[in-house]
Figure: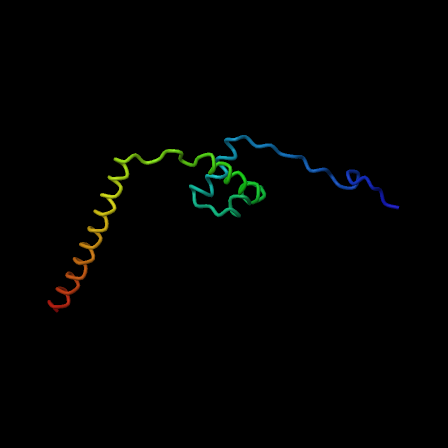
Length: 105
């Protein structure tokens, strides 16, 4: 009957190895260059799970361990408040411009 040895009937897959630089470049296609995971994997002839695993590993290694200092927290709070105020002023000016443009017609 049939042989139990599969290697004689089909070629064995060769396990490929990749450098850390290649892995980072593959992940950057998705994270920085706007490719979808599927597009990046197709262009590199890789399985999406492999790139997904690389991405998770790289992202976990790059998590910032730096906590904001009190000065940075205060500045961030001040800048957020300033942004909120500027957005409100911008919205008021937009409405005023529309109002006066409508009145002048």
